[in-house]
Length: 272
Image (cartoon, rainbow, N blue to C red; front, side, top):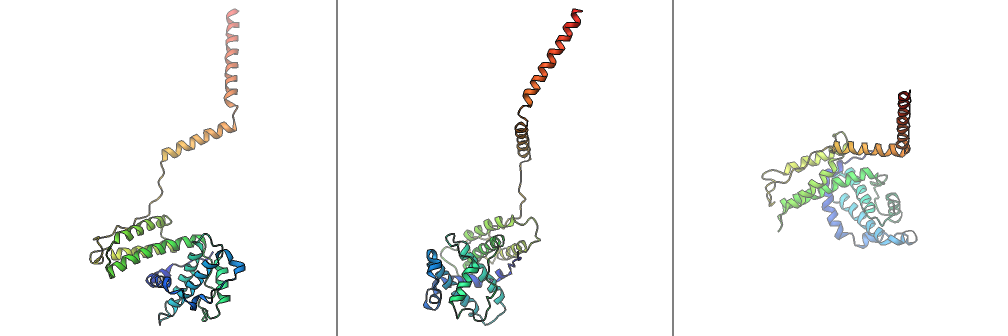
């Protein structure tokens, strides 16, 4: 299993901004006409897959043709791969794999990705790595909303709503990090640094709150030792009774026989 990099989240503001624009710009012939999937193969989910295809191409063009510099393109490709995985895996009604979906997009879209930037870079992400990416995505998505409030004030200016979501997601994610020796845990630390960077006086100028709730630290799972031991002893007793159900009966018989023999010899001595 390849070890994924999460560095592409450093450009999260670009991704989220263009994701929002994709929702209103994908539904045009430029993108839809070359997303006609084979009805015989994809009849149950044909419309959903064609919509994902059109959005995928729209998102691709927004990212790669809206900037003059190429220095971000490698990270953009990595994010697009996550995006495709997210669209297909989070929809339980879709059984199409990422590889199959991308192969079909290439087959029916002759003008798409002519520079081959995506070639070999759109693939199925393992479940564990995908879960890690979703944690980071949720964190940065809510963090982005806090940044937007501080750039452009709204009627609500409720930063607390988004910061609480960050705290909850971070609390779940950090449980995978008893230490910081994995790429994912280091990526969580990067996010924590960004979050703490705006959580100070002067940075939250449009928020109702003066400061945001802090992100939690890792906490080792706690166990009630006494309850655990009692459970183990009870389990052992049940196991012992199951394996040796006749032991109490034989103990009774042997005890009774021994007592009878003792009384007999005592009476015999007294008789003499």
